[in-house]
Image 1: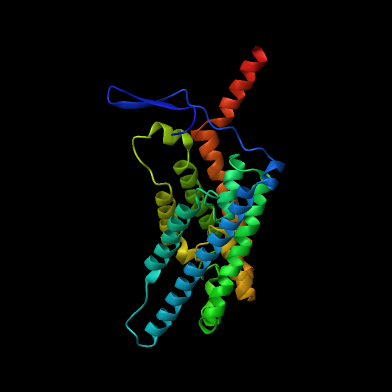
Image 2: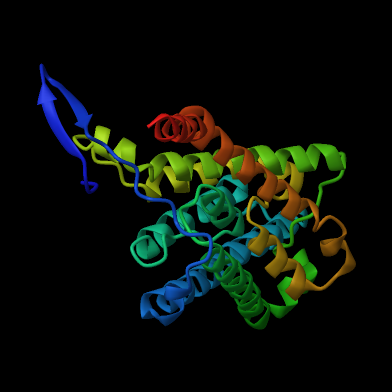
Length: 288
């Protein structure tokens, strides 16, 4: 139960009394630099993103190779789009579950950016998380290429590209909306006020987050291959190295970061009314 929250039952209903939001993270927290927990969290983000890209990119390449064999007379068409979506969503569920208590289980620069805007992490932590995530993605894709070099080159290295028949505006919109769904789910599932209010209903936060990744992939794989994670798109493009992988790379950064910003604004300032509460507190203190 969150500190400073008392939950009582009245007439069969639960109410949160005297709830107070935790203080916002400082913009720059130099004290983090002397704490082992800070570096442990960065390492956790690096390893988690490495494992995420290793498993998911292997799944994408395996699916493409199976589709190729199917076109040559093999009836087996592989795991399909559903299997790819399960790979991405399932790995996020597993890795968030494993790392949530160490680093928060971001595994995505867009999620880190959203949580920074929500003042859940400091600027220093956000920057180093993003660097660790991108490096982890590059290393994860590097392992895939090392183990599956022939298939990696032949089937596009799992890189995100805008699919034929879709405009850049459509692709950008898909990335914005997909990331909005993900970051909104993260903020809702980890909201301390919700945990206090609904403490009688156990919620395993990694589960809805993993499902959000799963359903977004089902919707947007046919459009962009589904980015919603700049590190995932960057790592695959970096190791694959072909021009096509870089053509629309901007889309897989602008879309997720913009979607994360919109989701954070919606959750914090519309649903949680953080701006209105801050203004009310300021006016009250001014009057006093």
